[in-house]
Image 1: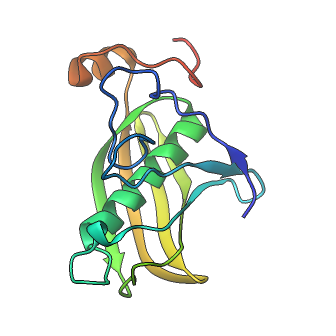
Image 2: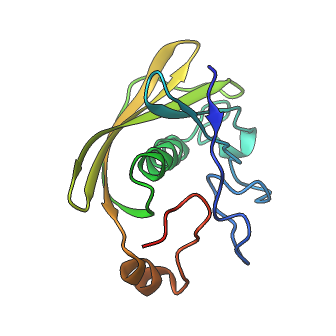
Length: 161
């Protein structure tokens, strides 16, 4: 897939160590997201390591959930240009994901209603869907973000409010 790489506004924050997308978390997934304008979706390619397995050689379902939630968050970020908090995930694990495998995770915003954003995400291996999710996010204004995180909203890639 081809797309435009997304800027990560959290990179300059002291203590930033997101398991999903921090490039410096030694145990994390280190996902890097791009936006496919034609499909209007965000995606990332990943090859998880053996430490991300539940059963030997099989990607842990919780790691799959993390990947789906993470790509969903970045789809929200791309679409509404605001940070958000996950409030609900409905996920179907359809097939085991072998490790190592190259995984494509992708997500698309389905609906924006005031502060609620609904996203559809899927995890694919070799063109076959192995997991899918419908995820709901609560879009955060500056006050809510600061209340929850204790920090100001990162402004890179976000409009000022």
